[in-house]
Image (cartoon, rainbow, N blue to C red; front, top):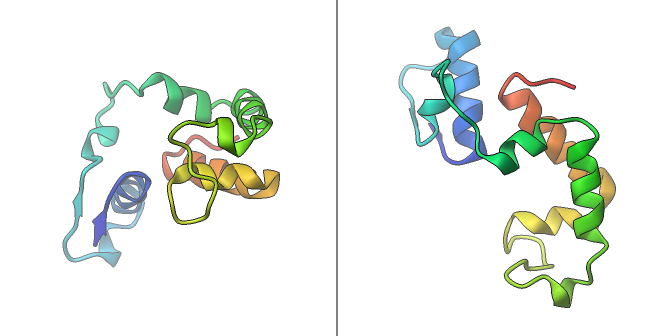
Length: 103
């Protein structure tokens, strides 16, 4: 199993709870398993119920053409999820679940 970015966190989480399901694995997010790991500020925000939803609502309110570097089309970056509040909520839930930070 190979995990990158958020998928890397999912791999670490899976290996921590069900190592019997995977023969070998690779991730670029192995540091999240260290008890001394310090999340960056945006990740901390995304882990905070209420604050992360407010952040996405503010970002979604900015017209797409005024979001430099934030593509508005699916498949062109993480920010496509801002187009729909339910999608942003699902992504935040997945992120929190993958790192064991359930709301």
